[in-house]
Image 1 (cartoon, helix red, strand yellow):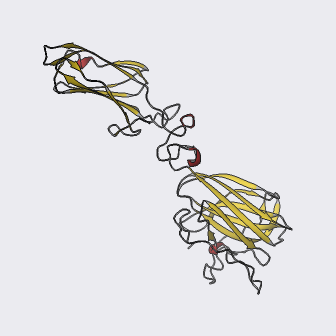
Image 2 (spheres, rainbow, N blue to C red):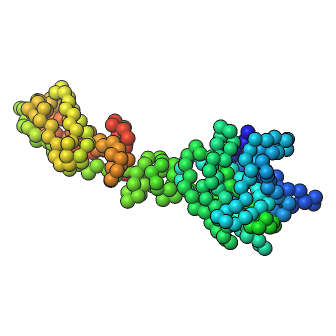
Image 3 (spheres, rainbow, N blue to C red):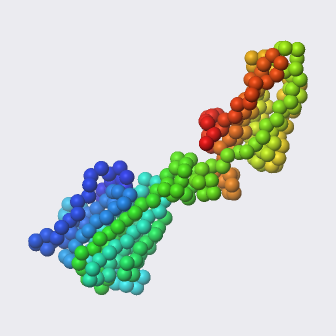
Length: 319
């Protein structure tokens, strides 16, 4: 069936077909002989003068053999008839947007975008079309879906036309296009530059000295914890406690209060929040990590790090 190279991975440079001295149809005149859109900024110039339309999109095959079983080629865009068509294929490796347009001199080009099935090569639906002079289509595309672009001349007129396709990927699928996304591999929200928001929690530790052997915890809390966040506290030799915040506010880790942490040990707190599906944290959040070393008569300076969004343990430097 159709051979569709990856939009990004195709390495060969697409050759621009020059008008033949024999006035032959363009190489991508037929649906099964479509050319790949193989660059994020794609341009192709083609002469539609001898281009045709097909009563059966599967006849002929890509190699020019007689086949059958396809549908009749569409030749109408929102009430405007067209003909003398050529075909291009687009298979994005990530969701995002595309801008598709065609320019011509002496006639009005028509551009139609369809989805088609990799399973049987049949067109499944028309996405959109334009028959306006200088018209441009701006469309959302989805990762893994296959699209085909049909270019023809209004009223079946022909001549030289130039197709332009600009692809704007959204690698992490968060709705923020890569060109504007500061975190292209991690979904986030627009007001944070396409990055997940950081949790701005505030930890609090109270302790009593134990005569040079370490400290006894008298208070262990985390303030400004959003609803649904998970708080995990650990201390050397005294176990751990996990609390899921039922509401936004302060989380108290009372299970560890009264425990003794010997000198040379440590106290750790991790706060993480997964996807909520809506609002500020719909894609989750960059978590918070805090650590205090325990000395003979107190605590060392607090270490603060971030926890990569979508994980509960991958500690990173805060951006």
